[in-house]
Amino acid sequence: MTSTPQPTAPPSRLAALRGNCIGSAVLLIVQFGLGMGVNLYVTLPSHRSFFSTVFGSATLAAHAIVAVLLLGAAVGALVRAVRCGRAILLTSAGLAAVLAAGIAGASFAGGQSNGASLAMALAAAVAMFCYLAAVFSLR
Image (tube, rainbow, N blue to C red; front, side):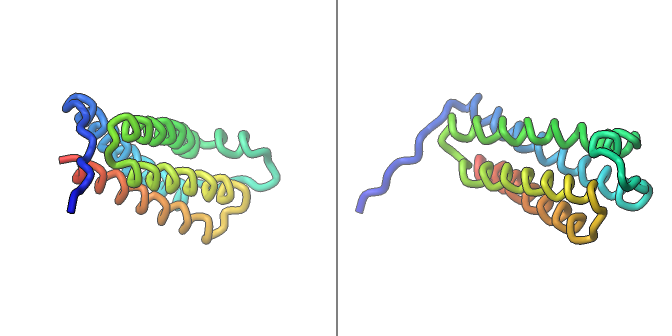
């Protein structure tokens, strides 16, 4: 029985991918902390536009800015994984979880439902698992 060899990427590309995944995990921790602060201590006004609601509080604005950075890091991790030919499934799932958390966050900003808050937290946990599993799979 023969097996197909796994593509070998230069060590520098693997190191960059590992660093990108670790960076994404760190951003997820920061994002999770900011999200808990928003959920506990910020009252979002109703009947205001989305952008005036999001940027009406410094904590919520920081949460939104870190979300954009996290989205960029997630896309970057997937691009690097495709170029290396390794951890593509994990980084794809991580990006999908980040997008799901963002959609739940937009829903939470509109209505402050508990379900949207839970969906954000669970999606962040899935993304964290994916990026840390990618780091360990790249050893």
